[in-house]
Amino acid sequence: MGFQKVAGIQEFENIEKKLIELDGKSILLTKVEGDYYAISNKCPHMGGSLYKGTLEDGVITCPRHGAKYDAKTGKGLGKPKILFLEFKMQDDRSYPVKVEDGNILVDINIE
Ligand code: FES
Image (cartoon, rainbow, N blue to C red):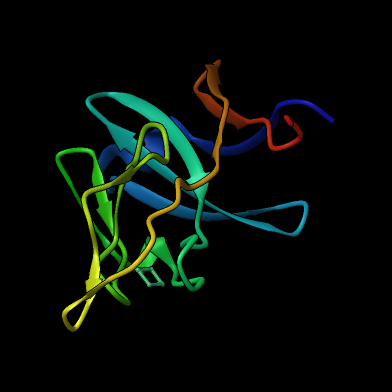
C-alpha cells in the first residue's frame, strides 16, 4: 500500500510522541531532533507499550522492564535486566517516514 498519512506536523508542536494504528499495527511515531520516526509500539521483549514509556534524547525506555531502544532505528540498546537477570535484547521494527505538505506519512508494508 505504500506511504499512508498518519498525522500532521502541527500535532507535534507540543508533543514528541504519538501512538497510531495502521492496518492493525500499533506504531510509535516520534519527533527527535526535528525529524520524525516510526517504530513498532510493541516492545520486542514481552509486548509492553513503548508509547507509555519515556522518550529522552532519542531513546525510548519500555515501562515494563526498562529495555531501551533508539527511537530513530528501533535498535536495542544496553543490557536490560529483570531483577538481577539480564534478558536477551532484540531490535524493534522500524518503518520509513516522510513528510509531505505538512503531513507525516509512514510505510508499514516494507519487508
Ligand atoms: S516488555 Fe519491554 S522491557 Fe519487557
